[in-house]
Length: 76
Image 1 (cartoon, rainbow, N blue to C red):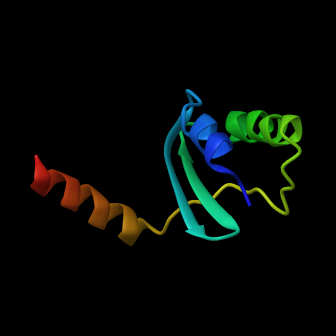
Image 2: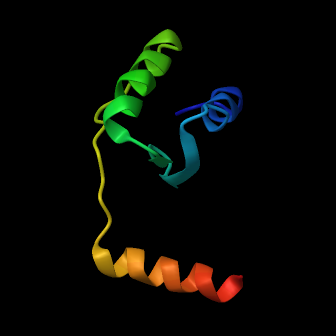
């Protein structure tokens, strides 16, 4: 598992917009461009000897995106 200091460092990376731990061994990052972020993230984990089983681009279903846009629209 990732420690507090590494978690904080990861959150401060300029291309990381959101970071959520979805279970003790999984986290989801929201980045601007996955294609350029993934190599940087792999380099970051290698520098800290953090083992990564998989890393992949995730595109949420359109319905989830629509619900989030409506939710944010109501809060402004």
